[in-house]
Image (cartoon, rainbow, N blue to C red; front, top):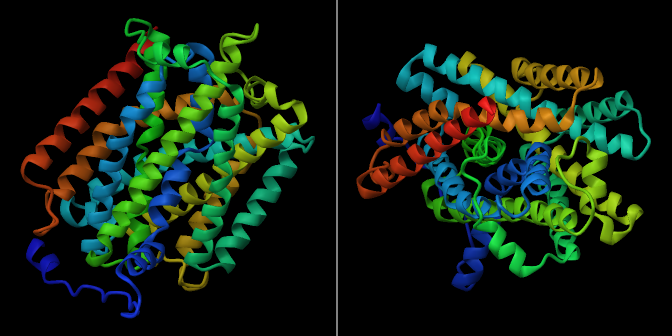
Amino acid sequence: MIDRLSRCKLLPKPRLSNSCPPARRSWRRFLAVAGPGIVVMLADTDAGSIITAAQSGAEWGFQLLLLQVVLVPILYIAQELTLRLGIVTRKGHAELIRDYFGRGCAWFSVAILLVTCVGALLSELSGLAGVGLLMGIPIPVTMSLIVIALVLMVYRGSFLTVERIAIAAGAFELVFLFVAWQANPELSALTSGSVDIAWHEPKYLYLVAANIGTAIMPWMLFYQQSSVVEKKLSPDDLPAARLDTAFGAVVTQIVMAAVLIATAATLGNTTQSGSLDSVQQIAQAITPYLGRATGEFLFCLGLSGAAVVATIVVTLTAARALSEVLGTRHSLKHEPHEAPWFYGFYTTVLIVGALIVSSGVNLVSLSVGVQVMNAFFLPIVLAFLYLLARRLPNPYRLRGPYAVLVAILFGVTVIFGVYSGLSGLRG
């Protein structure tokens, strides 16, 4: 397999004008390549992640802020490995697991993926339902509009169109930076609070596991690998793709930190305390300095952008992975009648999620629980990723001291995430 992969014909470089200065050519290459990393990272800061960050700030102030910074390199390392796998092998994650470890392991990995995708989708749609309620729109109406819009987008749009829509929607998450700035947190409280770690508190450890689960989700690995394949990136595009991923990793954790800071700063200066139980309470908690109307509008904008981009990613990921294992077409370049299984899976997952949310669920409990579930799946997800990266042909193979470092980081992340989740559940 390795020899066959090492002999595969590489894709040609994009043609760039030789008359352009080197710096301009580099930026043109980056803009042509960028997208998969930014989209998946914006989706990483989904409705469930934002709610988890808000809950962290509400219950523990700034005590979980340092964790957001620590997770940046771990998030980047995991996603960078998917770049190598997709660019070098030109196969999706499920396909590679099937080829290297057999169909049974592939179905097992896809089963885990589907569980996490459904959990994430319920979080996203619940977030959008909560935003709709803030605006006076009934949940069934909100769900119907979302399903119709996303089905039309995928059925009628190309891969690049879907990617641009996802980036545009996810960009609204940046409003949380403005909200955090307006909350005007005290620097001394922020600094001292971020290093005050409540190691022996089960509820704290539960949220640690939830925050780890927000950083590395199984569907992120599957989505980015499939996206670089569908975008037909070549090994020459790897540096730009890495920059795309690094930029996204920093942005997503900055947004998480901003939500946590805004909530912690706000609750620290009011009579409110404790957990937040609804989208309405979170909106009220993080936006008092902006006025109710402005605050709710900005919160709805940010949460909606996060939820929409994540909904696009998780539904496409579920449909692609199932189609990959079945060996059927799974690309947006194909018309619905050419890839019926792919489009059928996409539509079914979206409709089922909307129906479940319309029945009524507790958004905050669901969202935090989904992130903890992601932490419990980390051992399996990261093990497959690590083993696949170790099987790449040179010079892209994960090897040497860097392989040892990655193994240590993944091991510590897995142990701490699972331990924190178990401790929190026992508490």
